[in-house]
View 1 (cartoon, protein in one colour):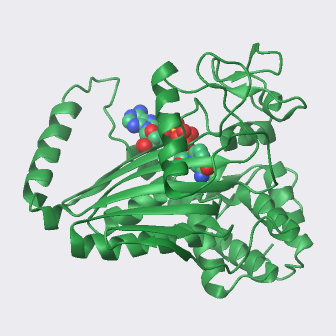
View 2 (cartoon, rainbow, N blue to C red):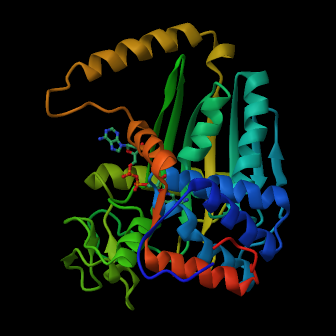
Length: 352
Ligand code: NAD
C-alpha cells in the first residue's frame, strides 16, 4: 500500500481485498480472511468506523503476540438442544461469532428458540452484524455482550474505569422491510469512536468522558493517557444497569470471564449471550409483521417538517447507501496504521 498524507476515499471492494490480503498473509485460511473482511468492511459501510478496518492493526498485533489465535475453531462447553455454550478460545471474533450464531439459527429454526453462549472469543466487532445474521434467517435476537480488556467505563456515580463498553443489541426482521436493528455500547460513546476521534484530531461531545482526575473533558487522548480517563455509562443509572446485565449474563452465566480487575492481556475478549426466537415456529409471524408495521407507522407519524422519526437500523442503512455509491472515507492516521500492520505480516500484495 502507498503512504497517504490525507484522508482518502476507498471503494468497498478494494478495501475488502486489502483486508483479505492482510489476513491471508498473517496466516488465516481463505474463509477466515473473507469473514473478517466481510465484517470489517460492513462496519465501515454502516458508518461504524470504530469497528471497521481501523481494527486491523489491533487484530494483527494481538495475533503476533499470541493473544489472538488465528484459524481457531469453537469448542462445545454445554449442549442441550435449545441451549448451547461455545468457547471461542481467543479465536478471531468475526469467525467465532459467525459460527456460534449459525449454530443457534439452525437450532432455533427447529426448536422455535435457542440460547447461544459464546465465551472467551477475541473481539466480535459490531454486534448488530450478528443481529442482522439472525434477522436474515427470519429470527428475532437479543444479545448481551461483555468486554474484558483495559477497563474504559466508570460505574454510574464513579470516576475511574471499571468495565468495558459492554454492547447490547436486538434484531427484529420485518416482512418486505429491512429489519429493526438496535445496537449500541452501554457507554455514552464506544471506545473505538474515541480512538477514531483521536486519529482524526477532533473533540468529543460534552458529557461523555472524564480525564484521569475525574474532570469532564472533550479531549479523546484522555482515555488513552497514563493514568487513563473514563467514559461514562449512557442513560445514567439505567445504562449502568444494562451494562451490569451484559457483564453478568454475557459472560459469568456462560462460564466466561468478567472484567473484575485491571487489564490482564493485550487481547480484547468478548463473551456474548444471544437469545434467538423464530416467530414462524411460535406462530406469531403475521401478528409480528402487522403490529410492527402499525407501530412503525404510528411512531413515524410524529415526524415534523424539520425532524424525521428514524427506526433503529435506519441511520446505518442510509450511510451504507451513501458509502456503497461514494466509497469509504479512511483518515490518514488510520491508513498509516493499516499499512504498518500489512507490512508487519509481509502483505506486499496488498493493493495500493
Ligand atoms: P450508536 O451510539 O451510534 O448507536 C447506534 C444505535 O442507535 C443503532 O441501533 C442506530 O440505528 C440507532 N440510532 C442512531 N441514531 C438514531 C436515531 N436518530 N433514531 C433512531 N435510532 C438511532 O452506537 P455506539 O454505542 O457508538 O456503538 C457502535 C458500535 O460499536 C455498535 O455496533 C456496537 O455493537 C459496537 N461495540 C462493540 C463492542 C465490542 O466489544 N465488540 C463494544 C462496544 C460497542
